[in-house]
Image (cartoon, rainbow, N blue to C red; front, side, top):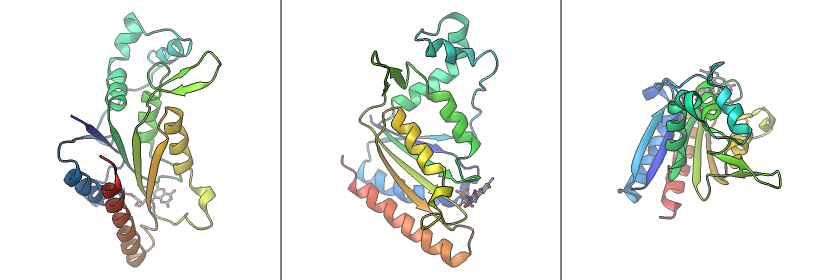
Length: 209
Ligand SMILES: Cc1cc2nc3c(=O)[nH]c(=O)nc-3n(C[C@H](O)[C@H](O)[C@H](O)COP(=O)(O)O)c2cc1C
C-alpha cells in the first residue's frame, strides 16, 4: 500500500490556517487515491528524541563512514524508526507555519534527527553528496502572518532552507503553497486562503497516479 507522510509542524490544531489548506489538498488527494494510506506525524504532539551528549556521537560515527553498533545503535533505535518512516513514504506533505522568518523548532528538530549519512544521503568516492531519497514528490504548505511574495522575498528563510535540505537528501520535485497575510486582517486572510486552497485542489488533481 502506498503511503503519504503528512508532517505537521503547527500546534494550533483546528485553529491552524496551514492545516485548513492541507485538508483541502488531502480531501482531493484521497478522492483520487482512495487506496493510499495517510500517515500523520504531528510534531507538536510527538515527543522526539533529543540529540544529547551521548546520542549525538552516533552522528559522528556515521560521518566517519562507519555503521552504528552496540550502545550507539541502541541509543538511536527511535531515531532510526523516524528515518525509516520518512524514507519509506511514497509522497511527503509538510504543513508548516512561518515562525520568526523560518520553520518552527519542532520541524528543525525532526530534520536534525532524520537527515543522516548512510540513511538519507551518502558521500560518493568522488567526494560529492548523493541523496538517497530518490524519485519522490513533496508538497510543502505554509502560512504566515505577513506577506513576503512581492518585494520582501529575502526575508523568507523557510522556502530556500526547505528546498535546500530536501534536495540534499534527493527530493527534487518539491512544490510550495504559501498562504500569506494571515494576520493582516480578515479580508486579506480570506482571499489568501481561498487562493491557497484552490491551488491545493489543483495540485492534488494534477498529480500523476
Ligand atoms: C512563534 C511565532 C512566530 C511567528 N513568526 C512569524 C514571522 O516571522 N513572520 C510572519 O509573517 N508570521 C509569523 N507568525 C505568524 C504565523 O506564521 C501565522 O499566524 C500562521 O498563519 C500560523 O499558522 P497556523 O495558523 O497554521 O498555526 C508567527 C507566529 C508564531 C506563533
